[in-house]
Image (cartoon, rainbow, N blue to C red; front, side, top):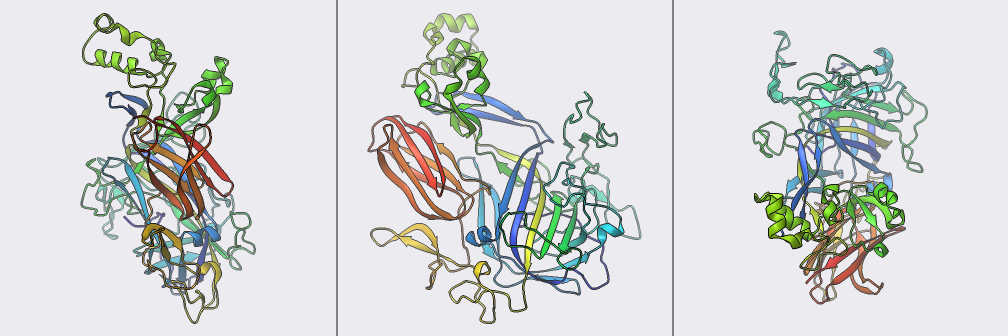
Length: 593
């Protein structure tokens, strides 16, 4: 799959000198991904003890924008994770990514456990492409920035309502194609189109909607009616777009250049390097972007029978974290704050976040205190096996006992339910704001120990990219832990691959999941770093004594995992604590032997 985070269609070629021409270095990004489901997905949880209790907890409908993910990186943060783009835009309309550029290659795969894992590698990249630019594009149309993304939803751009230039890109092996003049795309594969104009000989009309996907924003005007394209709601937009119909939003490339179509440019990140050039684009998977399929366009990698193959994993779902003093050692799935407030137990609620291991509450489990317990699981198993209520109650009366006042002890009690991480087939919409600083002819890096050292360079700082060293353990052997080469000396790993850590891009620190939990004796702890830095990951007993330090070192940005073998410790509740800078978070785990 093409590596960049962008989409758009072919633009109109302007046979003049390109006014966006120059040499630029990436200095900041603000990206919002919106994931639209291709099919309905049922989310489930399964007990952690092998009792066979799997329960559906939520359904994600098809064709809806079910979640978003942001990526916001300053100049310093880009340098810290090894991303560096040196772009040349020539006046004749050709462009190139210069030697010394590094960019992330992102892929989502299914691991041996059936879980979706996003892998990013920061790789060296060079490329050539074609572009067109028109600094007064919006003024000439005329139009202003619409302030919405390609789906027609409110966008992240700070330039809504203003006029910008137009920018198109094509023929790149790294970037996606996108047009200068805005267009309404469809969610269709390439073979859905045919040619309606013998003079153009270009497929440009949707003729086969069989493998096109619909999109809906729901009844957002609350009229009680879902207006389908071409009808519009009270806000002037269709609420349901059938497969093959054009989306409400636009795909396009826009730009601002200091001294050309603006006098002042400000970074979207307070305190960040002031940009000289801002490029913004909007896109979505499909034929126009030529994105959304897997590594091979001819292979149906996700097995859904369509050209689209992009998948995303959902690492956890909403859960309420509870006060241990109230007897809860795990979170509870869902936001149950109102429920506990109504019971006069609001003080038992700590906060609401996400979790991959938690208790399950359901009013249908009232016999067992509204919790999924061992007795509840076994009684419902009897019903599922074909027994009626009377038979199961008469045959297994002990299973009707309320065992919700304690955690599972091997016989009865509240069950910890693990989230079954799904691979959700999606169509990805993207809104990207990329900031650049102008560079001179000898721009680059003048530091001899950097990967992109150039003896003719006149610039250093965050234009310089470094490899990584493998930190040795106490016995002098490679530990597998990496640290950046910020001092002189050769890097063990060189500069070919700066990071091979598995991660999902994020804008915050988090202690993501501990799985399995309860466990015996091994468990894996996942945590996320939005930027590189030192991180501590330690395990304490229930009275606060430090037992083991799992990680205490410089760590690259991304989602990482550490395993803990607790075979030498007794059964009980333990505390995992993650700390990095001013961030700190704890999570309880249960060792059950």
